[in-house]
Image 1 (cartoon, helix red, strand yellow):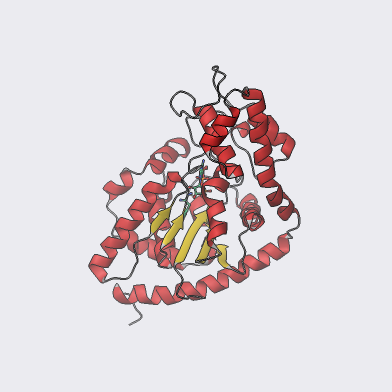
Image 2: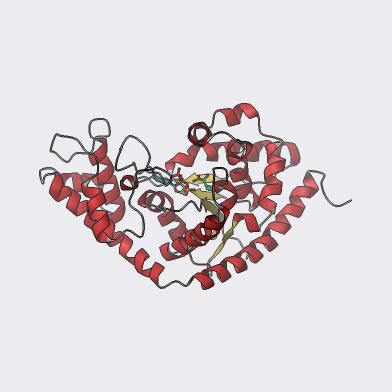
Length: 329
Ligand code: ATP
Ligand code: LTN
């Protein structure tokens, strides 16, 4: 499947609750890029076990995540799409890259610091960004569509690629992050100063891709805002309203200035109604696509994806083993 197009790689953790932040920050781009690039998308199930989980539940959640991504428009006929754990080359490259990663760099990773505080530290959580670098570099990816929160991990990936190339020769292209101009960091509806997150306990803090229009309306209506009733884009003074403007802009394609001008004096109630409607409209096709997908077919497609990905990864693995002195004797 390798050809002269540039390669795109990205991953999503199968931790349930895929939300409008994941969608606008990353998945919309994943889908678009399929038209022009050699696209590889991965449900990163090894990454997600760095926090506690139940194996039987997890088996279901992984399939659910794959199904949601297909409903969003990831097309296994156009993208290589599979579960990370089914392609062991990710883990081997992660080990090799780990030997070149200064612990000082890992100590500075903000996601690690946050998650270690919340879930307890472990070695997997600590080396999480090294496995992410391996995911990307394994396929010589050029472009990585992600939300703003992954900026630091991408910088580390670029540094590791350079470090590897300096030591072993020009093996890896230096990958670029593709971060959308707007909605790259959708904030929590319950606390607009922190990122909308899958794992937050408050379910009202996020809109899920399968939420009904009614649930969407309720969640947006209860979104935390402020007491000055003007709709204006100002992250310092009005983070809640600015977040809703970003979400609406992401869902409608209209500019934030345009929306702020239209709703400036409409009142928060009417503005929130309009935001909710734009979100419900944007997600309607995802909901209906999801309903028409069959679990057994999704599982079959993921098996096939893993086979194809393994074939491709094996070729790259041989090259990496060769330059690092690890080929078969
Ligand atoms: P958690 O929310 O529990 O921290 P996560 O959603 O960040 O997990 P992933 O599911 O792997 O973890 O993220 C998938 C993609 O969604 C990534 O590219 C990430 O940058 C993006 N993303 C996650 N949260 C947001 C957000 N609030 N706004 C924009 N993009 C986001
Ligand atoms: N760390 C990412 C998920 C992820 C990823 C990747 C993204 C794992 N491997 C490779 C892009 C490329 C996250 O937490 N959102």
